[in-house]
Image 1 (tube, rainbow, N blue to C red):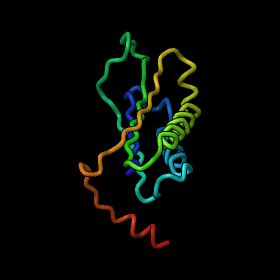
Image 2: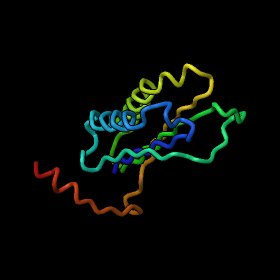
Image 3: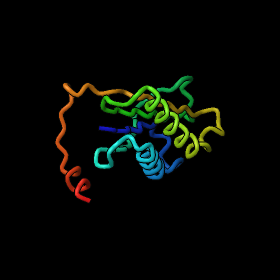
Length: 128
């Protein structure tokens, strides 16, 4: 159940490669060794409407929301967060060259009793 949502302000369209960001974040999640490949999802969602700080048109953001199932230690979660934040920071470095960009990341654990899933990808990948 590792699902990473990349929410970004619409003014980043054309200013950063969101496909490359999603691919790199997926690779980072897999490199931790903590998550099964068939469960990982990385998606980018554009925020069309937003107001940021002092409302300058140049202000932009990316918010990473990583939802995971229970079962990882505090240290594993921290190392995963640090790795994701480092990957994003590296790819988004040009945006930090201006005083108009903010990056955030939060890891949230999902309560298994309140989460329903059906996945046809797992059997295919587990059969390898």
